[in-house]
Amino acid sequence: MNISKVALVILLTSYQIAIGQVRQTSQNLFQAKEFSKDIALYHSKSFLYERVIGESESVVKFEAIPLAAASSGELTTILYRCPDLNLEGMILGFYGSYQSENGVDYRGFKFKNFEKFKALEFLDKIEHAIQGNKKFLNSDYDNNNIAFKFDDLYVVIWFSNLSYTIRVFWEDFDSTWEKTAFERSKRRFERKTK
Image (cartoon, rainbow, N blue to C red; front, side, top):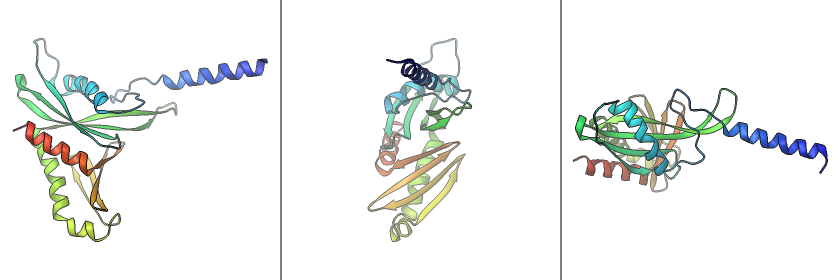
């Protein structure tokens, strides 16, 4: 093997190692090669402790239960309960592509918290928007859309064939939430928070 080939192999190996070393940012974004309910559940626990439950000297019990993940992998819903502090709600786990300040592309995720009644209000608003606009949405698949803002989320919904798609925009995230994952999240959240 000549010197130029060795140098090329060393250069490519160094480049791959450099790309793989993306630090956690202050906005709680992590490098991730794939996103699943398991990964969302794992990282949601630290989010819950740091941002929702808060630090405590005493032992605090809480539950984190994954409800559903969109087939796109861009959105996961997680139910949480902390009877010790009378806390209950839903976390939306967003996943997407990012670019570091050095221009390196990576995949990252972040969580949005809704306390119980805010979560129910959000889920109900989506369901009512779909039901109230079904005729309009059905009249021209893919072309007729409805949109609304909820808290700091922007939601766009459209029909294609006999199903609907929900697109949720939050901060730098653009996540697709299909009918099955939405309905499963809503049904499970309502059943488990009664």
